[in-house]
Length: 267
Image 1: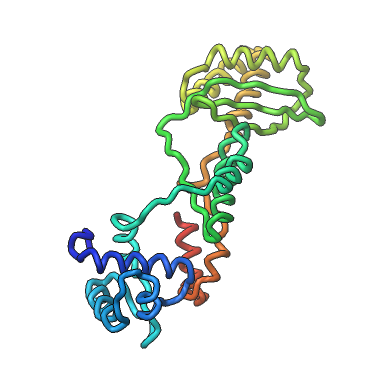
Image 2: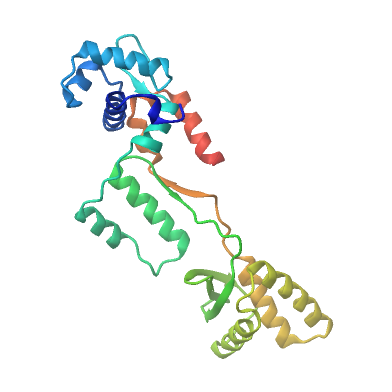
C-alpha cells in the first residue's frame, strides 16, 4: 500500500482509530470498540465489512478468529506516512524534558537521557537517532591534573560538542606542563578533522622519538592517548525502555520478543 489515496476517507479514519487504540491497549481491536470510539455512527456490521477490505489490502490482520484486528507493518507504514497527527506536548511534559536534559553534559549522555525521558513519557521504548556527521573537527582541548597519574581530558569538537574522559599517564604532569601541551595542540590542530589530527600525531610522535626530544614526546604522547581514547559512536540510535514492550499482547510470545531485541542489537 503506497498511498492513502487508494482508500476512502472513512476507511482511513477507521484505520487511524484502530492503530491509536491498538497502541494504547496493546490487544486486538474489535468492531464494537471501533463503532463506539470512531465517532462515525456506524454499526459493528458495517465496520466489519471495512475491516475485511483493509485485511484484503494487507493493512490489518486478525491474529485469532473473532479476536479483533491489529495493524500490519504496511498498516503502520500508511499510518505514519499519511494518517499520523502530531500533537504538541503538554507544558508539564516540556518542562520535564527541559529539566531532565543538561546541555552542559557530553553528547552521549544527552542522547541517553533523552531516550530515557522519551520512554518514560510514552511508557514504550524511547528511540533517539544519533546525528550523522561526515567529519568531526577538532576545536579545543584542555588537560587537568588528577591524582594517581591521571589526567582529565576535556575535548571540544565541531561547534559545542564536549567530551570528558580520564587518561592514565606514565609520570606526573604539573598544571603548567598540561597548559603548555594544550596550548601547543590547540594552536597546531584547531579546525582539522580528528582523523587528520590522529595521523599527524602519529607522525610527530615518530619524529620526536627519532630526535630524542623528550618534551615533545611527552606532549605528543599525551595527545595520542587523548584522541585514541575518544568515544566511538555506538550506533545510529540510542534505545531505552525496551522492557515496556513486554506489556503488549502481540509481543507476549518470547520468540517474537527475542526477534525484536535482536533487531535492536543489529540496528
